[in-house]
Image (cartoon, rainbow, N blue to C red; front, top):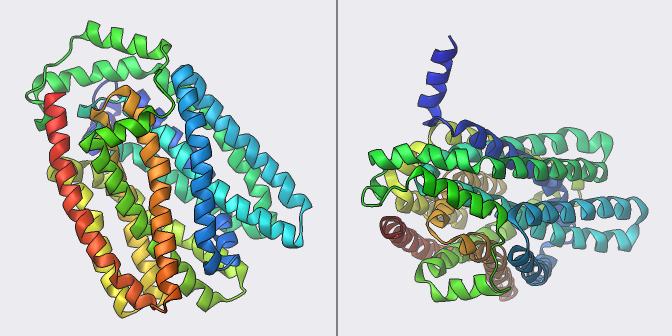
Length: 454
């Protein structure tokens, strides 16, 4: 009976012997992080909406400033500390700040509370990108390219389950306990995640050895021309990584992105993704404010229910389709699916800028991002150097991401000032989505070249 159960699991998620512990820990790690974030995300969205859509661009600018301050601090830690130490410090840094926000919201009122809410909006946006970027940097560091297409979708299931749980906690408990109390729950989850990250790092050698058989048998078409390392080489490499600091300069990640066409292409992909996302977010806030007015509880529940639906759809796709899509279509075409969804969605929004359309578009697009685009995009980093996995990736995931926010936020605000309505603003995203599609296909081809020449 047990053998039949194991066989069913192996067929469902395409797991190899020796990968189980690291796969479980990765999924649990992602679960804890996204549960922590999605507990506070509806609170952040409500505070952003309460401040008015006309102020969102300034909040996004504040987020970019926060990224500019924290990114050099993070890269300095990466250059001077072992992987285990700097990851633990990053999570405990944000955990402490959650406790401080809890104390602040308990004591402030009136205008002071409004300003604290704006700071919290900025902080949450910084927090989300940093903790998730660190997670994927570690996962890219411990998983080999031959495992990424099979297992990253499975790992993402843990994140979706965490997001679903976090949304559910806020949706069902916010009215009774109060949103502020939930900040402490998020802080506890971060502490547990720091411990799980350490256990995952300890399992790297078993995971690396499990990949050798696949690579030797040539089951991954991208690796057929690659030399398969010996077990002794793998063990020595992993042991060195466990005890070594990554080193390098504080701005090394930025320099590498600017010098590498491949990393610069990923940065451009991130830039287009965030510009389009920001336009959709602003349009959603404008339409929601028009419908709900001063009903803050109604807005919070709408955002929480939206997140529940997104994560339920994402969970189903990740469990049964993500790994197969990445293997069948390849990384490039998988990356190109979201630009297609965006093109169609903005076309519909241009015709009918109403609540049902914008919420439905946002649900489908976000589910597509979490289930397909994110695992495919993270696979792009499995073929770069270890330094780039932590520094260049973090630069793209944080600074470039927020630059895209700025371009989207201020261009949206400027066009709104000139009287362009919601339909016209949606039309402007059609050519951006088309260019994004072309870039995704190019990156997929570059990824194959990188793997075969690695």
